[in-house]
Image 1 (cartoon, helix red, strand yellow):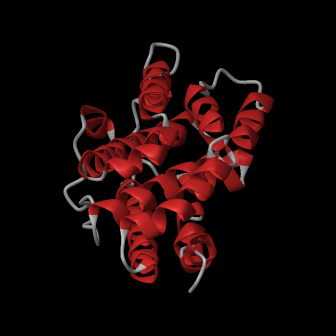
Image 2: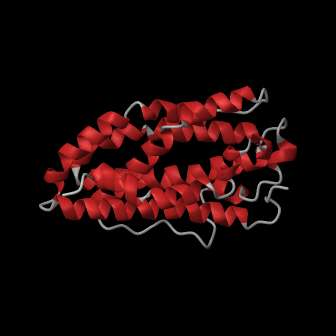
Image 3: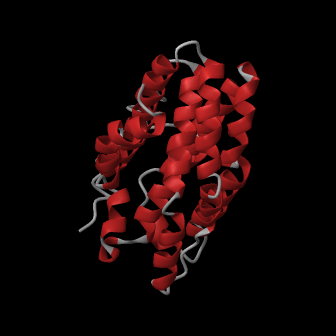
Length: 223
């Protein structure tokens, strides 16, 4: 039987790479491409992702109490509060000229682009574990991003990435707990592993679709 986290790393690698190279996330590959509107777009995309995944995790934990052992590791309240703080800062009077051209103002009101839907799942448990995997996995580089943003010597709010850096501390515990949970959650751990990998790719594809919906707006494309 394949190890879950080996399978996740190998089988989500392609979507992970696509996401990193899709605008607006691609701005992190080139500091010269960074601007407040693109950064605002990233934060609002991540707000949608974190809202959707937090709800999925809570729903699964309500029906499978065993998942409470990992559901709190995403620290969703702190992360969403940090996102709201940063988005507000980018939309205050200081950043108004840049933020005004953000193409996803409507997203801040908890709506989705019409072309993007929250992914279906193999099962609530597999969807939740996959969601936490993508959430905590995305936190692993948060400290690096904070340092890079601070080095720009600009007034860039980084509460979100600081909150995610805190989440990163749960990564090892998450892997240990999930490995212990697999046989308790399903008779066939192998089938559950396949479902988790499938759902993790679905979450990556959700993020990619949100990014593509933003990138297709001609007003947001970088020169």
